[in-house]
Length: 103
Image: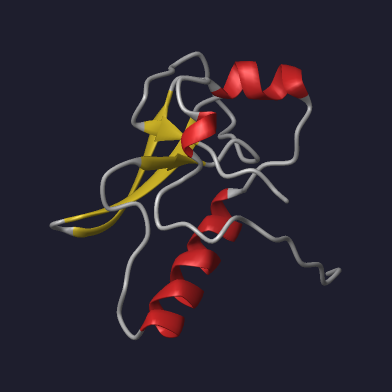
């Protein structure tokens, strides 16, 4: 296993400038985006760093760097039930689903 580090913007919600973009549209841009594992690790780090805070309280981080074998893309948010990981079609886009760009 190779160790690596990525940096993301210091924001509770995923990047607003990346709203209304589907995973398919993001893939065409050939950008580096957060994976499901990275998003989960970011949640743990943020919770530790803030003494109990959570990310994505309003929106969903689209983990465009990951896909299931059927092509669906994971999305992560925090809701009343806790951490939620769901999967959406790769062509789905709306203003509440956003991805986190690597900076």
